[in-house]
Image (cartoon, rainbow, N blue to C red; front, side, top):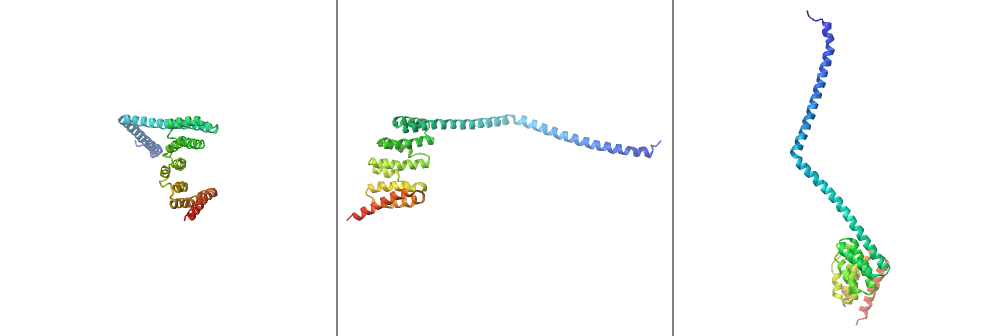
Amino acid sequence: MRPSRLLLDSKKPLRRFGQGFIRQRGQRVREDLEQQEQLEAIKGFWKDNRRLILALLAAFLVSAAGAWGWKSWKSSQSAEAGLLYEALDQALSDQKIDAAEAAHKKLQEGFASTAYADLAALRLAKAQVAAGQLEKAQEVLQAVSGSADESLRWVARVRLAAVLIDLDRLDEALKAVSEQPPEAYAGLVDDRRGDVLVLMGRTEEARQAWTRAREALQKEEGARALTLLDRKLGALEALSAAKP
C-alpha cells in the first residue's frame, strides 16, 4: 500500500527541519574540529618550542628587572649625591671651607659622574678664590674643565683662566680658553681671552677678542656686561693713543 500524498506532504516540514538541523550540526562539528586542530597546533608548537619560549620569557623578566633595578640604583645614587651637595652648600654658607672640601672629596670619590660633583666643584672653587686659596681653586677648576657637561666645562674654563691670571700664569690662562667654544659661550670666552692677551702685550689681538665678545654678548647679556667691555675697549684705545 502506497502512502497517501497527505502523509508525504506532512513529512516535508520535518524533512526540512532535519536537513537544517544536520547542516547546523555539521557546521558545529566543523567548528569543533577546527578549534581542536588549532588547539593541537598550539600544543605541538609549545612542545617543539617550549625551551625557547621559556628562555625568551626568562630573558624578558631579567631585562625588566634589570631596568627597574638600574633606575632604582640611579635614583639612589642621585639622592646620595644631592645630600652631599647640600652638605657642601651649608658648609660654604657657614664659611667652613674645610667641611666643604670634605663633602667635595666624597662627591668626587663616589659620584664623579653626576652633575652634583661638577656643580659642587664650581661652588667650592669660588669660595677658595674669595679666601685667597688660588692654588686649590686652580686644581678644582682644572678637573671640571674636562667635564662631560658642555655648560659646566666652559664655565670652568673661563673661571680657570681668571685664576691663572691672578697666579701670573698667562700662557696657561690663554690655553684654558684657546679652543673654539659653542656659540652660547663665545662671548664669555672671547672676553676672558682678551683679558689674557692684553696682559701679554698683544693689544691688537685683545681688541679683536673684546670686539667679538661685545657682538656676541649684545644678543644675550645685559647692559652691565656691555658696559664692562666698552670700558675695556675704551682703555685700550686710550693706551694706543698715548703711545708715541
